[in-house]
Image 1: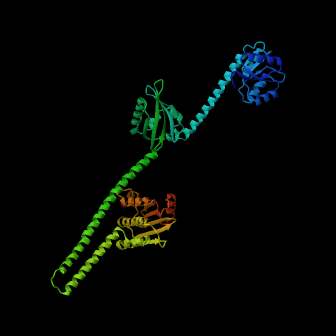
Image 2: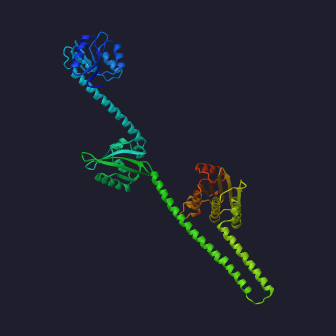
Image 3: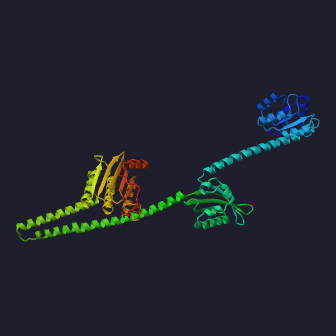
Length: 523
């Protein structure tokens, strides 16, 4: 319909006189008409195809077209056009039949007083029906969009109702409740008390208290707690957030969402644990640093300082005016020379402890030298295998690899009870790989998780600072293997690639699953 004053009318009529009479009545009723008259089924079909009509006025039974055929044609093309029968010869039974089939109204040509009101009423009802269809379509789209959103949200969308007498119910629950709570939406809406039963006893009181506070103050309901789904051994952390509104009958209705925050909570705990371990490691390193400073100061004072004092004492008799035999001065010179050699040896030893000069010859030479020193000191055979002739590393990386190697050998000498150590140092695809394997008693999970395992923690921190990977594993029958993979230069670290290369180079002596038959303290 374009306008109430304009009317596009399709007449199914074979009498031109009756058509003119109807149009005259419509004009008198305030309509500006645009009319097309047809009398056959094909003409009706063409007319319905070429344009939209506001109303169809039809005789009941024409020679080539009747009212039932008109209604069928309207339905076939899914049109919402009211059909009003205007006839001169039809019985009451036929009129009831055609009205039951879908005709809007029926009147006799001899009495058309109701024609204009009937047309206006039909146009109004068609408009209302079209608005209803539009609203219903929009509602269906909105419902489909809502369902699509809720089904893809990482949580349960819900409505929660608290009545005046403190009874609760869930008017709506999304399908995600099956996954998160182990309860179907229908079951939770039928038995709302099932949800509080999932909450662990320690968190149940805070759940109810925050709900009551939110209802009284109309404030956002925020709650975090633990639930345990029946038949599931794992405990889940969930976060509930809902906004309340007061209804006209005094009830409180919340619209909210529940999400699984177990991963976040575990991550928070892991971060807190890591920070605690980092603080402990930092304190330990500071303590070690102070102890190292004290040791160096003590060695300088006791060793170098004492030797220099002895040199001064040897020089003192040579500075007086007393005449002595040449043999006296020769003896003093030899003694001073011996003391100077001792100072040089002490200086070299202290400097090597701070930074081995062998690192200037490259990481391969430094590792081989340290392995030989370890073998000479502990009588544990230590064999170094290196495919490359030389591996060019910057100073910081070389020192880090060397210190990890030193710490590994120290742990072996203290705890492994090993007789043989195999070392592999390889450069591959922009990474440096260091493997140290012993045939000792094998480190256990308990040893690695000890709070005082600062050696392992320090080695892992060194590797992480250089964007590398540190791995240690043990077996009571095969010993312990320490593996580090660190990117060289500015190569971007890719953990998957590092782990792949690590697995490739573990070789046949890789320790198997940890067996906890022997619990030997390692670190």
